[in-house]
Amino acid sequence: MIDYCEPEIRDQVLDYLELRFGLLRTLFDDFGFYAGPKGRVIVGPKQYDETIVPDTAGLLIARVHKSVKPTTNLLQIFGTLATRNTITLSRAQTLKYLQGLDIKPTEDDIVDATNGYVLLRYDRYALGCGLFQEGQVKNMLPRAKRIELEHL
Image (cartoon, rainbow, N blue to C red; front, side, top):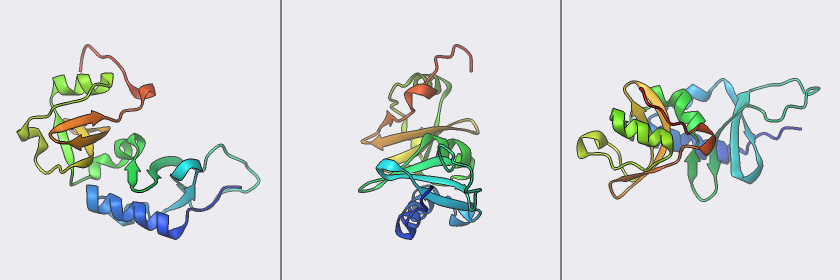
């Protein structure tokens, strides 16, 4: 049986996404919120066929412990709609990020980013999540998504 997420946790995630990234709560009106193990928050269909036992109810969008940590999947899918706390990377920075390396953006790259989780972009593409602190971006790209590219 899939458990629905507690309303307080759902609201905490939605408030965070709206305040941090400018992602409107209404983006998620058509989704159900489900609780996963270890503070995982999953979005999926509002209703599902209970005769089917899926591995997961949908897409992992955040982990909630003391604070909210957005997932790379969430930011890759909804990142084009983010209006705050984004950093646009150069080609060279993007290649490093995709390899799993940390980034030191220039002040021109930062624009409106404040310390905390940020969305990293290349051109118009949402790449994923980074942790911005003291002018550095700690790479949060999952190992399974890291790749080494020669051409971009």
